Image 1 (cartoon, rainbow, N blue to C red):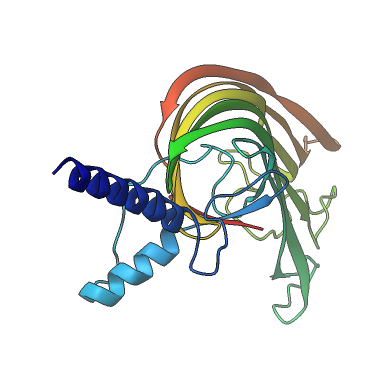
Image 2 (tube, rainbow, N blue to C red):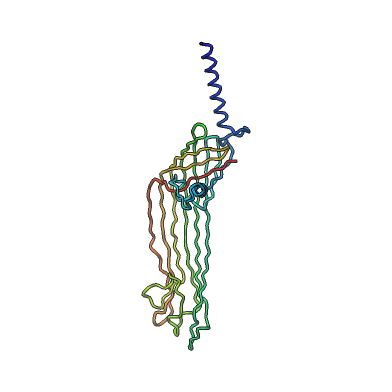
Length: 282
């Protein structure tokens, strides 16, 4: 009986070790978890989960209550990479560089002594926007099997500006003090007859942030994980800008630039909004 107990114990111990090895390696012997020197590339997993959900229940608007992933940085168009300094230590960086240049042209009747609606000039509104987010984190991993938790912290830099430029076909002169002008919605200040905007600049965001984070990844296939994270962040940013207008004062043409007062804000908060991420390691 004692001998049988020893044999059974050895069997179950061997089976447990074997199962653990199978769990941590693929059938071809490829390690499941990332190793020192490997790189991870992350993408937003929410569209994939929505597609799968739609496929199974026929609903085209499935939403998920997700972990937050590097709030304010790792969203949508952000590219982020991770590099393993050790098997259980990694650094992660993310960057988003976005620029928009939108030009809207409209015809307006030319100012002349004898108005002719067939003679037209062009008013132009050019909208430019730049959005830059850069951040990095230091992460430490711990866990058993395919479930790997991690914790760490990092810094991020935020910059976002908008600029509107207007070019008018009809100039303001002593003869045409209130020329025909296209109303683009933001270029003709209310209650200011004859005044129109030439340029509007908004520095919507310039700031820095620091955060402490904790998250989890599940490696459902060799070097491929699904995960999300929570955290606590501290940030500081300011907003400023200016507006340049032109007008006829009654005696002369005037061009004036007015600065917008600088607004600052800071805060500290937990962040849980965002998307579940999918990470590939190679």
